[in-house]
Length: 271
Image (tube, rainbow, N blue to C red; front, side):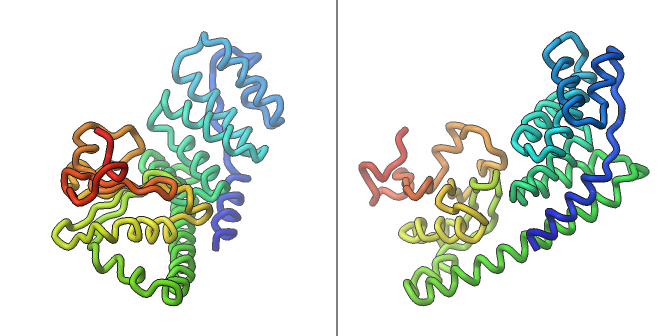
């Protein structure tokens, strides 16, 4: 199914039409070129000139990002599309192209978010509107299958190595899991059912289930208050830090000793 999502994205991507931008004729003609190297160089000259308005610059970043995407340079494409969206937050095609790049990098959660934003801002009469809906459906199906397969492996492993770990989720009632990026998660639990001694296993369980590759890179926080639950990847506020029950980062665990005083020393959050 993962290959299906990538194939679907590639099929739509190969047929995309790029709108023209209007500023200085020479460089912009190159920035709209079907020849990728010419396109990238022309857009780069516009970007480096720093003489154009935000709309023109956003289109230059969009066109160059599209060029990088077609050359399979996905990280560069994402960087340019990020810059394009900073200048124009409602550009549906920038979200669409960035979503395609994320799919091709196996970042399915981020891809789905971008596809949904593309759908939000895309006109109903846009020729790509139906394709965006198809991409959303494909990624949702892919994520579901990948998570199910991962969970099967996880369940089989713990049924043999640690029967108690398979009960971790039952000991801590999960209300919500927010995927901040490919490797980072915020978890909301019911504190009344919380067993803090099971938090490390809870974190490992979620990381293994949610991360398709390299779950050891997982970063995860646990809260019991939805009002302070992080929903985007930005530095935590002091209020969020104080309310955090538990943190799991790259295999390490830290406790909030304001709420769990039995943990002390190096296990506690540093205030």
